[in-house]
Length: 227
Image (cartoon, rainbow, N blue to C red; front, side, top):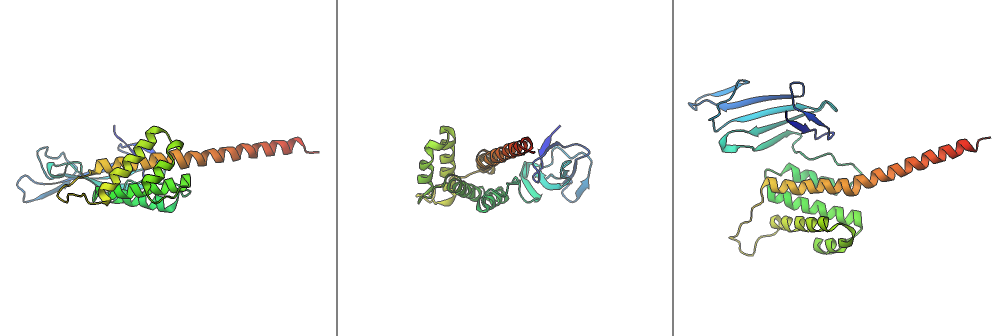
């Protein structure tokens, strides 16, 4: 049974009869009528689409999207509510980063190149804020933090920089077109999510844990010294 992640609270749950509803739409074989029901669809149809609603058992919010099933637009997904699959990022992450990330997800399927460019910009905002660097170019900023991240992370964020440049700059040969697919661009956004967790969320949780332990100690010492 398939599972999904709620975009509102990040809770993972199974899509079953209690949490999910789907509706299949397609034109008839003759092409002169449409069908709207829950009966099995024609496997040979080239123009099928599924409308799905999922209700999260944790926060009870409902997501709505369509998914292409026919040959013409197989696996093409359109998010209706929310309008993207962006995760909810904590407010202690800079607003500019959160906005670029959300916008990149909103246009992911419409313009993967533009989405990759926004992912690159979100990455630059994170590097400037988290590491306190501010050079003229992202290339220089990434070099500045080389000794502060693992080689794998450093090579990967360099890759994001280069991929994002494809959407931001025209090739010298204007007849050369380098495409970026929505699946490829989405991987850049998954990296942004990973770095948010590794850099911001883990630091925040660690600081909160330290404060909690110090608070416990203050309380215990106060109890020990009561008259």
